[in-house]
Length: 318
Image (cartoon, rainbow, N blue to C red; front, side, top):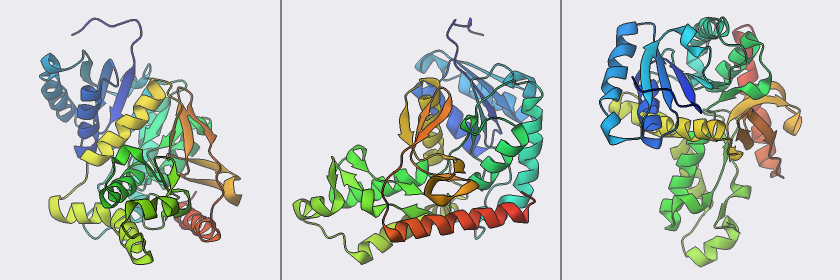
């Protein structure tokens, strides 16, 4: 075991399935933390994953990786929850709500028995619903309960646009907001490439961004998980890297703007529901929300997305 550095950044990961381990692996490669503890209902599974990851230590930055229990969350800087039933082929994220809400309540209770003021990163689906459950059950300020939200959806959106326009995806700024699911909303009116609005970039690009192209892109973004699950059974690489992006924004106090899910408190007329908007993410969790003028269609779609999540919350008693 490595000696503890004075500035330890510790991540506790609840759930060592494909998503949890993909995140742990990506966090190791990215140097996101100096200590990672793996928690699973089957201790041997967490222990095996820790052993495997530790064998990569000669090739990357030093990090302590150990299996543990809820007590290991007491001094964690970030508690990441990936445990829960996985989405099956043909199943929507919202179909998972009831069974995973029960699991989330148990996990939050276990963590809060030991941790005083943790920051949660909720990844288990349906993530917006479960972020709300975690917020309610933990009693924490809303800023300290973060859902992975549409960070991955926005990355998919950016990739498809970059591929079509022939530019580096890091130069494409495009957001998906609302539910991480079938009612999510692409903000076409806010897309810019290298600081140039999409409608102004199209004549330079020479490729058409017609209504049919936009519809195709949105369909691909919304259906990405279903397509991947139908081919390989699960998605984990993309979400794993998205989680590292959020984790580093918190642990390194980056003040990065990310479309994470969090409690809405009047934004765009929406309240008491968790969903994604561009937000500043830093060492305190979720900071300010970035307000932007949306088109009428985008605003209406965002309100409808909130209604979808609210209906699901009410169906499970929230």
